[in-house]
Length: 154
Image (cartoon, rainbow, N blue to C red; front, side, top):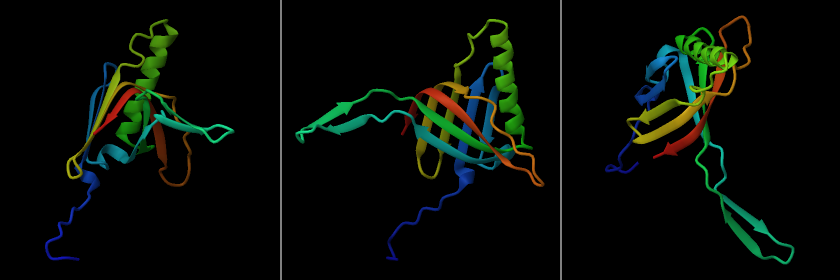
């Protein structure tokens, strides 16, 4: 390594997550392993460029708008994060069963990594469903999938 090369050290502890919704208030996770959070995956749902070839070899490029995405939080089944997300879904379902879906997709998520300088901001956030839970001899990780109406990564 060259003497003047700058080395950046990655640490999951430098990743901060904030989830907000009226049913759960503000859930702050400072550092990826905070409160049982093990991993975060940010994925865009819309392929914004499609290239197709015609029979004669002509190429058609299509631009597809859409900033929808999915944030997956992998949490331990014994964690406070899991319990909070479970309360969120159950609160949404209870309101839905009473005919009130006004708060369904009004959650927000903000993810910031201080060292990398990256930020992901999502609005219109709602859990897809209560995830599958495995009961085994040791605590398992549960993937909570949060769909986002608008997901911006910078």
